[in-house]
Length: 237
Image (cartoon, rainbow, N blue to C red; front, side, top):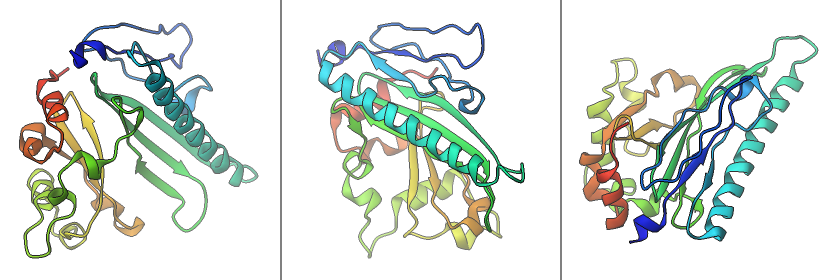
């Protein structure tokens, strides 16, 4: 019943002239991709509508708006830093990767040149919301403790899963094969997978490959049975 009540519609403003906005309320909403944020001042992050709880909906949209504002501020600061030399550049791609009655994931990629010792950067800044609470998803609460905080006397399952799906090259093996590495996560319904990218120092960023870990391989690690069912019942798109 809760899944039926939490029907969602997503509307994303197009960033090019003449593009259309799609809004639909269904049990499993239709998804559309958001074009590149850097090409227009128009809305780049999705907004949620159709939640049964209007307070949760308002809170989720507030967080999306805040993230959008934060990203635009980063872009402005970057461009302002080197505007005199004309070298600065900043582009951002925002893609709605996963949407269900319980969860929303946005895959965000930036490419920037802002000066400094590591001026040219390519980064991934995903964002996932828990639509049941209207808050950003806490992955440490989403998964059982052992996945993200494995006991010292046991192998790290997360590291094993990552290495299985994104085996490093010989040059990257030392940088990646570390049980203490933290990861950026997001959900992707196209791949039906948890996406994981290790958070590595800038000098090792080239080794931070993205792994697609199938939902079926992590279902036993998801704490809430409703979230577990959400992942497994969401069809590929």
